[in-house]
Every structure is written in C-alpha cells, then in structure tokens.
Length: 387
Image (cartoon, rainbow, N blue to C red; front, side, top):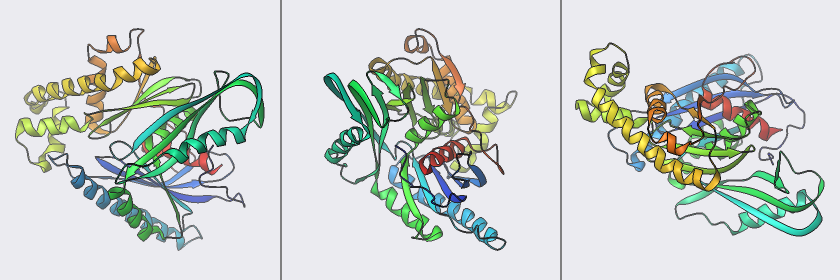
C-alpha cells in the first residue's frame, strides 16, 4: 500500500525534504530516513509565515504560497550546502509536498464486492479493484491528480492493516482515495522545488489528511476511531477515521485565521498590526483583551457554527467518534479549539460525549525530537512510504 517512493536497495540512510503547505504558513524540514524501520530524524526545520491580508482571494494566496515555498526551500538548500562541505550528505533523494484544503480536493470511495460464498482472494484482487476505480476517475478542469491510494481494507467486515497474500472471504471492501490539486499552485511549487533541489530529485504531492490519518494511527494505535480537525488557516479540515481507515473528510468555511481577520476588522488595523494585536487580545489582563473581546466572541461564534455545519453530515453518514483531535499552531488555533469546545452544539454533535485532545506528538529520532507537529507526522508518513 505504501510503495510510492520505492525502497533504498542499499538500506543506507537517505535524506528527504518535507514541505507542509498551509494557508497561513509553509513548513519545511530536512529529514533523515534510515530505511531500517526506525523513526525518522528531523535534521532541520523552518516555518515561513505568510503576510496576513484582508482578502481571501485564492489567486493571491497561491502567489504568497509559492513565495513562501521559495524562501523555505532556500533555507533548506543552504543547510544542505553547508552539510556537503563536511560529508556526502548534501543531496536529497526525494521531496514530498503535503496539501490541505483548499489546495487539495480529496475523494474517498468504498468499493465493495460480495461473492455469496467463501472465495479465495489476494493482493492482485485488491489492486484490480483499486486500479479500476482510478482508471475511471477524471480530474476537474484546472486540477491534476496528485495521489491515488488504497486507504483501507476490510475482509468480511473486519479491518486489516494490509492485504494478506491469500484469504478466503465472502466480502471485501476497499476504501480508495484520490487527491486532486489546482495546477496553478502545483506547477509553480514544482518548479520552485526543482530549482533548489534539482530535477533529478524525485518529487511527489500528497493529501495532508491522508498523511495525518496514517501517522496518527501509527503514533496512537490503541485509538482506533477518532476525528481530527486541522484548523491551521483560512479553512478547517475535518476527517473521520474508524478502525484506522480514513472514511470521510469535510471542510469548514472558517479556520483559525477567522480570529485574525475579525480582530483586524474590529480594530480597523493594518495587516502588519494584526499578529501583535491578536497576541495581546489573548493575553489575560491586557487592555487589548477587553477591547477585542467582542471580536473574539464574534469569531468564536462563526467558527463553532461552521464546524457544526461541516461535522453534522459527516457524523450522520459515517458515525460519531468519541475522540476529537485538534492540530494547528498559534493563538488562532487555540481560540478555534476553545470555540468548538464551548459551543452548545457539541451536545447535539456528540450525544455520548467526546474527548477533546491535541493531536498526539510523533516520536522522532535524533537530532530534533520535538518540533513542528505537522512536519513530524508527515515525516512518519514518508518513512512508511519508503518502507
């Protein structure tokens, strides 16, 4: 299932670059993968903030995103050049780019086959089912397919981590995922990364949701079913995982950036003033906390309402989890989580109750063991793909 990158025939450590594309910032990491099943190590990482603007125009956002990718890639390329002076570790074998909403449109489909009697099936049958689905998928105008993946397998209703060589079953279910991204973003990002790391370096694009769901199941295998809310930027992406299978995704129209945007409008602030004003608005006892309290309350109401709008049909169709993870950074993400937690609608969404938790941290190897949560989880996904 995880064969995209191929294997390192020599089993030697290799370096890859992880690129985490958000709508508020871009994360970049240089990771070392041993090829021996050990946790990846983050050699260096950087997060490049994008200038705050009052507009949500996706064309302008794409331009800022590409500029931030260039800046981050330049930082990592400089580190690679410095390392090459002392060893042969100045090259990377792969660059993996991770895209969330609105840059990634993820489609999940459950393909079921009932045989009516015990029948021998194997990997070839699973691959054939997935291939038939992928063959019939056509990307939307202006988009390209960036990832095709088997997201989960059930045999006779029971989830299995991988397809055995052969099994006798009466029913199989394969969850297949297809991720698309707009060419107007993918093409310039690809060119920027080729410029810094060379066209000889393999390059792939992935859904952030697929990567996070796989990595979290690795980090917390005892938690079979959960929802994850990625509130990093302009939107919030909600995904539902059951039996470690990604079953569904939904997008909320309001993310963590809603708080910065509302504070800016309330205080008639320039874009340059917004980050510090939001920090002061969150600081207890600050005069700005009282001044911006109505703005924070208004933004909280919007975020809670849009979260319910996205979550209600997802849970109604696929089931309600008892654990809701949050991932995101900065004051906006903390305020988003608090807004959802305090919303009266939570009782209707989670009638049996819910545990609200930060997404578990990934355990990484040396030299960087603690750092950017997105980059750490995406590095785990990349390590699984490498085998």
